[in-house]
Image (cartoon, rainbow, N blue to C red; front, top):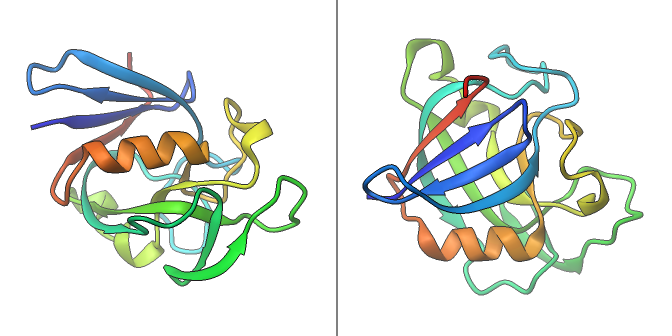
Length: 152
């Protein structure tokens, strides 16, 4: 089974094959507020997760989702909000400290702020470029393991 590793210090997401070998690396953004598990903190949780839901299959690149529902609007770089765009991979924590991740609505998703990728700038989620999340979405399935870590 494929697996995903998010490395916070380098702001990268790695797609690993069943042997743990790197298949693809993407530039991402984690939270501008740091790491943590508290509800309402807008921090990115760490640890082990699984993809619980895949949302947005077939949506156009840049489509904005609100409450995981497509709006029919394409997000732009200069939008003031922290858009959830293109595809949504909803994370569910599998460890005691991150078991509230799904109820915190922490996703891997596309963004309108592609110019900020590579720097911590999200509101807790893992942001990706819209083309990149569409590509990743097609590789992974519900149940794919995800690790968010600060370790090499």
